[in-house]
Length: 253
Image (tube, one colour):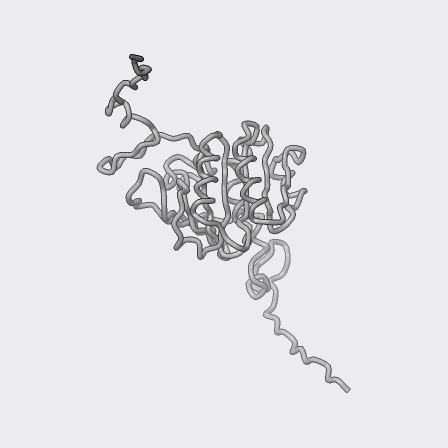
């Protein structure tokens, strides 16, 4: 009579050792687990983000249209990764190269990736995020949206790296479930950028979930026209209040 083959029985898992893992959070513990992050360049925002923009995890920025906040908010953290390739996946506009050079980026390390279908977008995001050479991935959601399963694929791929992985989504995506470790809503006003943190891993609630960041002085010239007309320019006489001409369309004969 043949004896059945023996099988290896795994040793029981030590619960204390399991709960000590950095990716497991206890609901009763208000202190978040330690994680790696990169400074945003703003002390108030770093405090709200528990140290800065997280690395090795999926970050979501929800904003109303391509308002350009991504570079203003992420450029300090991206500069720390500038020795490694930075990938831009389906950006709505081609970045202005002289401005990137002025910020300190090496254009030889910035790559634009274009996809035609959502399937190509998902595959490109996962493959780039998994690449060990990737220092940062900035991706703009396709028009037909993303499912939770696809977002989960992104999150798992980001966990395999140590870069910054940011997905830009429309403001309406706030109402959707997402496995992203950090989700923020971003808006831009005349002189400030509004950042609202509505999900952050390891925190049930945050007292500093809303931060206003002053726009750089270099962007002061982008105020509304009616304010520009009343702006005092050093060395020049104060402008007089101007009236606008009426524009009447030509009649067709």
